[in-house]
Amino acid sequence: MHSTLVRGTAPKKNRTTLNWWEYWIGHCWMTGWQNIRGAFRIWADLMTSNYADYALPRTVEDPEEECKEWFWVSLGEDETYPKEFLEHLLQMCYDIETGKVKTIPMDEVMENLKKWSDEVLEGVDLDEELPDEDTSETDTPNNPEEI
Image (tube, rainbow, N blue to C red; front, side, top):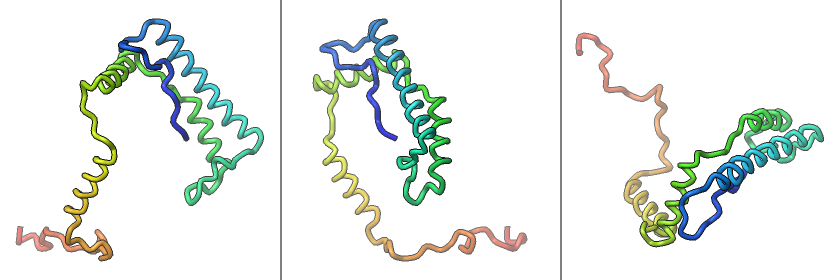
């Protein structure tokens, strides 16, 4: 599916706590309506036979069945989070914005990952076929007397 906004976590200057109104109305209530809207959207797709969004290439054989499964799953969704967790996220964002926590740019992370993978895979022939697990030799002897 797609990523959705975590309701009730709008940036606040120098505030890392949520009051009652922000949590219950801003997050819980609005997230509940967002979940209901998603379920009704999928229900509308079922009623109008609009299965185009559910016909994923190479993985879905029956888009109608996929749509039905998404509908039943959407009825059980609950994307509301505990107040403490949201306040923890707000605190982390505040720490990053104020420079209290050092962040690493994604380009640097990917560069380090590439260097690491090149070192690990040095000398490995990726085109070589690996033996099947069933036919590979094992270290355990076949003769019980050798044990």
